[in-house]
Length: 137
Image (cartoon, rainbow, N blue to C red):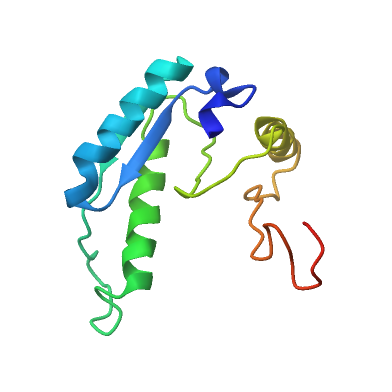
């Protein structure tokens, strides 16, 4: 759904970072279909879990370690693209709003103006149909 949003075709690169070898073929097929239907280039990156040197034994292999390693590798891959200054990291179950790219374009403008900023984030643990108060967020 994100690739069909206004502004998606302007992205330099879309990468699907895959961390489950058994799902690689299915994910590649979905990525190819999304690319064909939207005209947006989609690359697939394979990142089977391997703990980095220095990962504490008590943490190695845990769900949090696997997520941490996957995000680390996805970000390294994203910024290995020549000319890449920014990256959007999205989870596979994201439902993007119509102004998704507009919001992050504004974030880029802020990042360019203020060197003290590190990132722009739309992370919200309470997002979805209802927050803790029952109101739609």
